[in-house]
Length: 189
Ligand code: PA5
Ligand code: NI
Image (cartoon, rainbow, N blue to C red; front, side, top):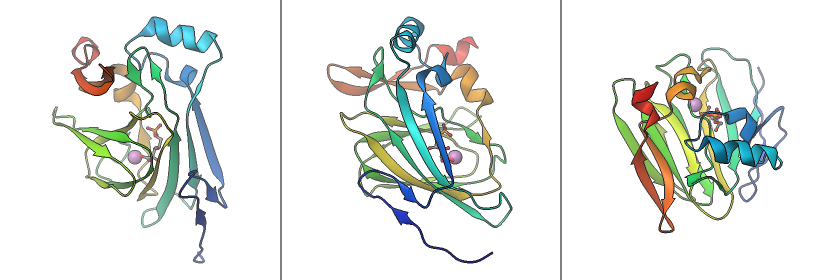
């Protein structure tokens, strides 16, 4: 394989060239927000775009790296901020690095053993996601939250566990401030 360079738009999050763009609307995340009535209402009223992923695909082989930017829109479903689905890597021992480019967010992380961490992310924050930690980004600001990521190309994504029960904690707005609350669903499902 030949080396290459691409342009990262640090303000708007685009990659140029880019060969894999994924859009996620609220209907792609049914059941992942606590407030199901607010979810259905927002879907009926136009099904908002929550985030867009720009990835430069290389062969999904051991030794290769994938580079990716994600743009999360500002907004909430009920009190809960717009966020990525979140996942473990399918190869659960694969790590990842995220770097904040624009806006204000939080990285939520947890292990299958119940350990949990929440790290604030702003432009210039580099976060290191170790092997075995599920990860989700949350936009707690009033503008787009944009971050860059790089991870092993053989990692894969495992959404299953997170889709069923979410993370240990949810990020909601209380008195105008991002607030972590225990996720009532985490034990239920
Ligand atoms: O691999 C990653 O962690 C990222 O590229 C994410 O896939 C991206 O930010 C979108 O999040 P998710 O895959 O949880 O929908
Ligand atoms: Ni990942």
